[in-house]
Amino acid sequence: MTRDDIIRMAKKAELQCYMNLTEHSLAIEDLEHFAKLVRSDYSNKHSEFWLKQIDKAVNGEREACAKVCDDIDAEYGGEDVLATWCAQAIRARSNT
Image (cartoon, rainbow, N blue to C red; front, side, top):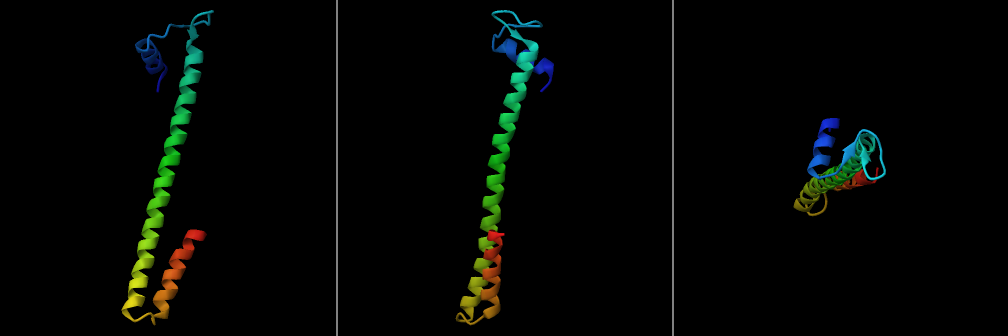
């Protein structure tokens, strides 16, 4: 977001902006500072959202892989030690 973008949006919002701060107006510098705070807050909220989405997807895929191992173990009547070990090892990765 450029300085011109900020001024254009401020005008669209019918804010009165002047180069110097007066009693009833906003200084351009103050408006730029405000825009920086909004950008930062917006970025933080979106990054937290995407980190949660990624974590959810990774955990889902991890569980799906462990389920494949469980299914292999079930095919062999619960006697496939390697499949059981794999399922446990995959699920344990969520704790690291």
